[in-house]
Length: 110
Image (tube, rainbow, N blue to C red; front, side):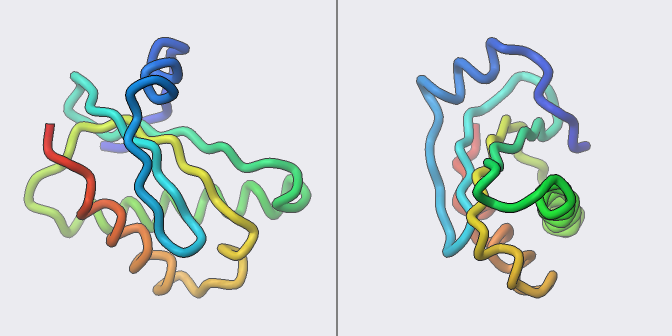
């Protein structure tokens, strides 16, 4: 259902054709893909914090996306590059789910 982006071609498509959708402390760069799943990658820099904080943020965002997708009737086959700001560390999980859901609903159908 949710997989990692594994090819450099996908990253190049995200860079050239991607649509950026943002919430308060989170942004998704999205491009439709041909698989029937969501592919995800993260761009979280060192300014965010140490490796423990960055990895925790990745796990929380991925789980929030799972919660949002689980409640949907149709999964949008999309490749997503997630950009997170340090403000995300202060959000509760419920607030994070609300932000992810708001962005996910704005992703156009392919």
